[in-house]
Length: 438
Image (cartoon, rainbow, N blue to C red; front, side):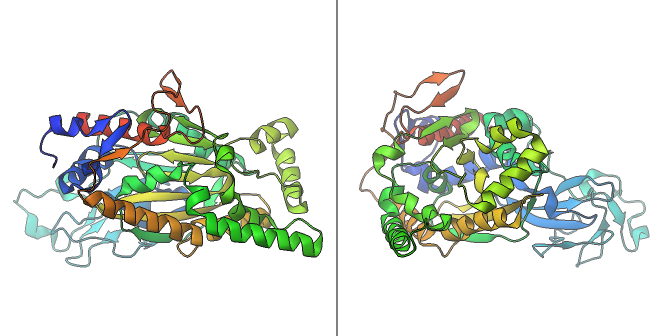
């Protein structure tokens, strides 16, 4: 079976299962780029990556190379990374400062940071031709729409669709939670990231993020080893082990405990996982941080912020955000069987260094390319994709608690943390994007 028409595309997604071709068919992947990634709001970066005029970072939306740049008027622009003269990419470095203008290395055309032409060598050669410096066709093309929420920059390549805040809906809680945990209400990006190319379809990664069944199975060996060390540490010292061990031993939480968590599905495919990990230990570092928060916000507001019961937010189709740990993973699809993920980390402005170090420990122990946890996931992503290529079966099952999760005002709440509602919610959005072009 292969995708050939809108009618057959619609038949690939049922309420409790989806066809394997959604993951492996090259034609479907191309349509995903056009109807999802070139139409939805896609995460570009954080404003703190481009602090000064001329600062730029390169990234991509689908296969489109893009540049995020700070102009001299203070505005952040997102431009296609292409010279309108002969098509050369203008920025080949991942980041840097372009000083006064972007300059093409091929023929020397220069552009202001809003994309307009600054200078063309020997411009008189274009007299009495159809070229005009004021014609948008000869300027760097801008993303159709660019908006920022609390410093997080998104772009859409389509002029149609809802504004960013409407599209985010309940998922804006990810950025509110992260920023509110700063005594100054802002975060600053750590200006480097881990980058992983996964040998699997981009949807497999997103489906895994709020899957509460797999952790105690896929990560059992890691969790068990950490738990053994925790026990030995306590027996030897009579003290509680450092929190970093709990970050790993938590993965062997019994399945019934995972079932006590809650997942919530929002429109446009966004989902969140509430609970999972206590982030308010009573060690001196945490107490010092909480004192700073109460001084900044007042005791009542600080308590509200610190007690937010949010562990993980999926911003479909481009982000996996762990706001209490100040990190996110950006999803960049490359091919049906290749996905780039960028793992970014943030500092809470005004928070003690010890709080940054605690979140950095999670970044290294759980989300980095070298961690045993990530190795388990990457292995399972690959073998899932390889299995979906075969003719051993046509359907992927999302039957767990299908039809049982209550819906209120378009928001779905799982009856158990192990419900496969997040996967069904993502494919509801996928189907809508694919059939309606966004």
